[in-house]
Image (cartoon, helix red, strand yellow):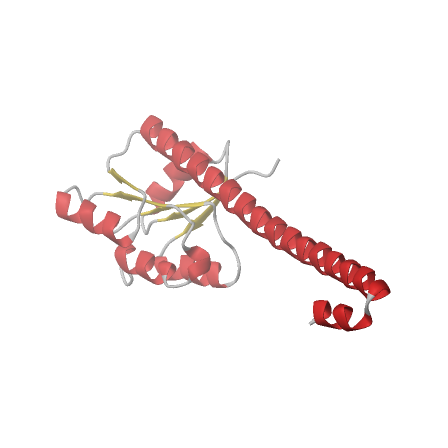
Amino acid sequence: MKKDEIAIVDDEPINLMILKKLLSPSFLIRAYKSGAELLDSVKKGIQPDLILMDIIMPGMDGYETLSELRKDPDNQGIPVIYITALDSLIDEEKGFYLGAVDYITKPFRPGIVLARVNAHLELKHARDRLKNQNEWLEAEVKRRMVENQLIQDTTLNVFAELVETRDNDTANHVMR
């Protein structure tokens, strides 16, 4: 079974190191020092299963990074958890408004980070399974509709041929 991939975005090397050490036994970790690095990686086709991201970073902050990430519909399903020193309700609300799924303030507790990461990955897997099942069901409905149309057409043709054996004019009328 493939390990879930987590992207960690933080400009502080110590935070990257701590989170990497905490999560690497269970997950494949990719560390990025900036939002721009993450976005470049995603554009190249590397899509993590979950992103842990700081907000306060030089250049592109975490809010801008998430806004840019969400512009591509293929990235809508990637859960983003902010891990930040910003602890005001306004900052937290802004993060949720932009599409973050969770908000953890620093200093973070390892047990809390692990619990939330696991919970959001479980939710993502459930959403992905549901999406796949829905796609399969839609394809199955289309297949059966085509099959039903074929059965209906065949039945009408057989009926028309049956009528034709008795009266040619009536058969043409039935076919029309």
